[in-house]
Amino acid sequence: MRIGYFDCFSGISGDMTLAALIDAGVDHRAIREAVASLGLPCELMFETVRRGGFRATHAKVIAPHEHAHRHLHHIEALIDESTLTPRQNELAKRIFLRLGEAEAAVHGIALETIHFHEVGAVDSIVDIVGAAVGIDLLGVDRFEASPVPPGRGWVKAAHGRMPLPAPGTAELLKGVPLAESPVEMELTTPTGAAILTTVVESFNPLPPMTIEKIGLGAGAREIPDQANILRLFVGQVASPADGDRVWVLETNLDDLPGEVVGYATTRLLAAGALDAFVTPILMKKNRPGVVVTVLCEEARVAAMEEILFRETATLGIRRYPVSRHKLRRQPTEVATRFGPIQGKLGWREGRPATFSPEYDDCARVAAAHGVALREVYDAAHAAYNQGCPPRSHRRAPRRRSSEPDASSISRASRPRWPRWLLSPFSKEGLSLIMHPSPSLLMALVVILSLSLVVAMTALGVVWSHVRGLPVRIARLVDDLAQRQREMEGLLARIEASDSGRAHPPVESAPRAAAGPPNWASPDRRVDTVGPNAPGGPTLIAVPNLAAPSTPATAAASAALGRRFGPIWDLFDAGVTPEEIARRTDQPIGQVELILALRRQLTPAMPAGRA
Image (tube, rainbow, N blue to C red; front, side):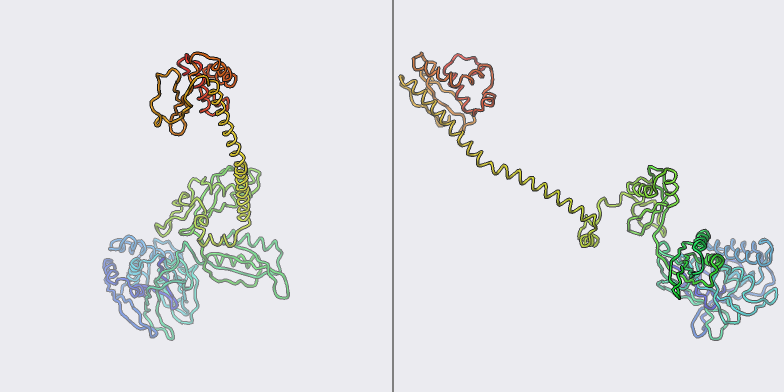
């Protein structure tokens, strides 16, 4: 933020202010044009002079002496008829209004009837209007100033000789910290005091700032052993949203009951203190005592001191200004199961916002619902974290102006996962890894234990299957060998039972390798069995058991009926070969071979069972 700081070590006047603005870089031609538009018989000049050995700029108004005394409405009419911008017009009127109010208070008359003496002269009007234009053109965000020395001695005015500060000046400087000066002359004039107290927001020592320009405005007279100049520093300081300056008041107490100290802190807070707290200490001679500390704004220092002196009977108070940095703040409201609860939202640029419920509101809700205060606090925080407030504020807004709107903070802009989890090698992630919290360690132990249990269970299941696999394979091989032996025995019995007739040996070959079957032979039929056999469907030549019956064929048929009767019965009942294989736990190829034998024995089977 850009500020202007008036260093008033030699006081301040209207011409010194105007000259300092010109020396700080304000365009003197713009000020001359504004003054000329007033229509006053005067000429404004700027010259370089030396005061106390230092170069400075002096503003001089050349105008004939006037005896007319102007009222406030006359001066406002001059300003309205000029070419001043609305901002310059408003500032000039405010300065004259402050002067008029001070004169009216001093003389005890109405503001409308007050007439200006020295201030109503042409040179004073030019100084104030020129200063208003220069302040506007300087382009700073705020003004601050040092304590003001009013001067010592006497001054001759329209009402006679008066002690310094003059009554009008003293009225204008109410609430302004004054500085002591050994100079026996008027250092601060009513015009300078009016300008200063109208535009300056705080009176402090020179704040930490980056100085860009320095303007030196010279007074009309030389002062022995001191440069009669006003210094104007223009530069950058930290934004007031991030920090400000407050006063700290402290006093040590060792002779008061605790009730009195507690009552004093209550009175201090009620009077507008930013904070008041008590710290136990051990004083000299090992006497226990307390330090009462008060934080307040500069304008409330006098009121806080009055309360401390009256309530504690202390003999002295330490006071000093301090700078403080603070978060931007915004009142907000969350909706909980107990009802709405007020709170404060604090944030810094580019950082997540923090929410703090208001104690008084939480205490009221807790008493109304008969629940613990901690429960209400937890409900308020949970409501904020879940996005229950009508306007949720989760992240600091982007700067759009000098003071951002906190309602633009969006909860959706906040990441769903912690940044240390998304970026474990970041500074925050490494800090958590190197210094884990007890809760994080417990969570890791539970996760590792569960993972170990799952892994051991899976390994046990796999090992049980792998360990029994050789036994299963051996049983399967034995079963296949047994099936093969049974089939070979069956074929051998069939060939033996039909040994009275000459039949060619059993042939088994893929369709592609076998020649065309001899379909005309009365002693042979060819059936397709085993559609899934390697090499494709297989043609098996079997003896034609349906030929004219012989004792051998009858015996073979009886033997086959005893051996495969259950399978044939299922087939006769309309069960498919696949279902027969499933029910009898037989390979499908063997079932199809048995059914082929059945067809040999019964050639006149229904077509649906073929």
